[in-house]
Length: 611
View (tube, rainbow, N blue to C red):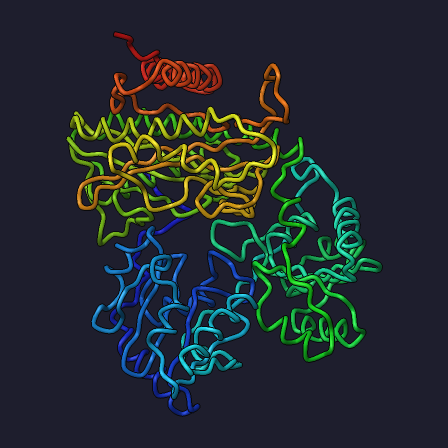
């Protein structure tokens, strides 16, 4: 059988340990004269995925998802999470200790305003919240007559006796043949933007932005090739990179020091304070700069100019080298996924395969390429009712067989030096029901609507998001997640600032890579999601057009299960798109496949029948 190298299937939740930890934390709160505290899923970089040493929320609550926020009071506690993790939270958390609330429907600041009293003093770690987030919490506390108190060091760190050490993954240089632009050129662009913004310096608090700027990669975060680090880039003068020197081999340090002053992380606060004392105008990223940084600058007399980090948009718009790399990575990844789909079709009918078997097989097919550096996130592989858990992660405890008559949803991706991939396919195990086919086809219609969209320059993801939902809405259905997220270039599989969602306000620009992944989830029965990555590109000329138009090029190459499609629900244009997509998949992948898989692909990509 296949084995997984880049992921494990152990249940890391420590639900049983929550009660004594909650009790210990409440004792510490009382000792400090506090009546409660806030525990976000965050580190000082506002990372989505955290190293084990930063998983304070999981330590306290048992919840291991990537989006969560806890409020602990003396007599009650609540965990907030979004729609992707609602079911997971209820399974992992001791519900006798924590109520579970929807992060969007009941925002934490509103809950605090309704539930605090004038005697409450709530502690928070200013390094784990953005300034905007802390201000919102402080306002909510004040509205209830309570006080929000900055506490350093972190309350949990003193209680976490077996806390893992911080990560020390070695830093590597990201070759120019993959990056497409030298670090010196990127720094020149950043400085030009600082001049336009009339800022004296930029604090780069997002490690993704640091990695992109200096063309470095690391391994501090699971499945994301990041070195945890920060930087200060002055408009004039030499930038400083704050990183643990133990991560730097001599040759890497030497190359970096040609452009940047390499300094210890402990020097960061002092360097920032020095900018404040010099009365400099310092740009802080409102999305990732911690409240502690704003407080440091203010204490030193500096001027904090909060706004979007200009690097975020530069990084999101891929250059020609990165785009070519993405196409190559998608073709390589598509061949691996197709080998997996063909294998699954042969093996699943007997009802003996498990979710773990499928995850291990897919990872193995990717490793066979010889180019895979890691998976891009833990594979989501849900059979039957597990597929309805949007971010389900199989463990040995939950591992389920793929049974005939059910659907199997598998969402996965790879990290290659030339690109990051993310693909979801929903597969019929045996004969699907009429309802499954109808719902799958409605999801497919939304997917095709995004893929075929033509839109004027300046259009945001929020404006396109309804296209993915229209066919579902017509049947009174919907899905509780965004339609798409940005994707990095051998960086994070979830990259801002652009996204296709109700909250996606950033205009889509040519060169951005995003996911297109509408879905439908019937709790307790099955889940459906169809995901491809798409590239924003110029639309073909339209006669009489008065504005520049954009469209999407679909990058992902793998068959969509035709057994789940009801052709009667597709329009003529939708059928044409699907047949053309499958023809392109066949043309690109057939030369990379063995004879048996190629024969399977021939059948899987045939044109749909017309009545």
